[in-house]
Length: 193
Image 1: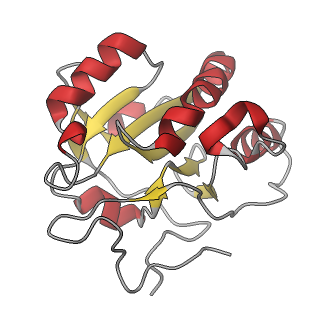
Image 2 (image 1 turned 180 degrees about the vertical axis):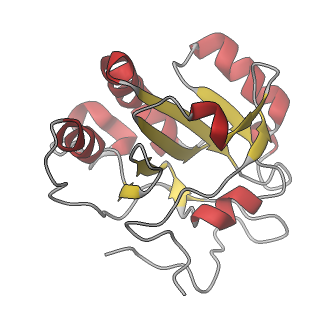
């Protein structure tokens, strides 16, 4: 069995505390035409380098029924800046147009097979996976990106077209797993393509 969800797989449920004080669940996004679940964090240079690209996509497609939820699954032991308090501070400062939730147990990261930060999972209205991988080809300096995979996949789907490239390798820091070295990845985790 693959570590990461495959195209066509159903979105795993979750129940996670969010920075806005709510506990968020998959069902909270039931009205969204498309749901983007992405694994992110507070410190990774690939996340901070591409935040504005992700923000632009989320804002551009909000009125088309596309919802975004960012999930931070990183160990706060490995990276203390990834704790919930720092997440709340970051959202207050950045005012991102998505829900930001904390996965302390890392169960949600395992259920989705999150490999890196950022790692995007796009689900259709039936909550079947239609795209997974990177947002852009240069997330550390997103303004220098030549390929915007997330935008392309979302635009194709919203236009009723098949997604030309439904799977790419996410580019970023690996998820920081509890009790492991900062660069450790589960042995069954590997590149998607």
